[in-house]
Image (cartoon, rainbow, N blue to C red; front, side, top):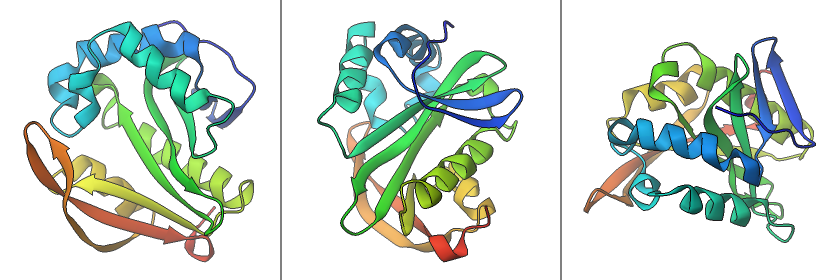
Length: 185
């Protein structure tokens, strides 16, 4: 999958980094979504609305628009290949809090890519953006995803009842948080 370059890159290791997303990333991201559609749609509501490269392009246009200050999205690059997406959504600069959302290609699961990517994004959010609180929301029952905030030292605050509409019904979300003073950078 073709890699594009933008101005902000967050290095994690020689084989893994986050690159600020840009419109030319749409074909690579859509290719993953389309290939892994059944796997991803188990937990991600956007998958059923991503039926063409144009849908992925429209999403990237929105989150990278100059006036959008509430989102900051990165492609995950592992071994020079785009393999997922991670970012801040709902950046609240007044209250200094962020929510992290993410997804990863099925064939890249179990390699520690997402845990390391979340850790690097947290470091950026706390140190460069001067945020105080980070949240991750995970579908109840999504064990792989809920292991990420647990391994990073997040506190499980509770369940957001029917917090997400997915596959024709509402699902509960586990809510995890981490404060800047708790972060082990």
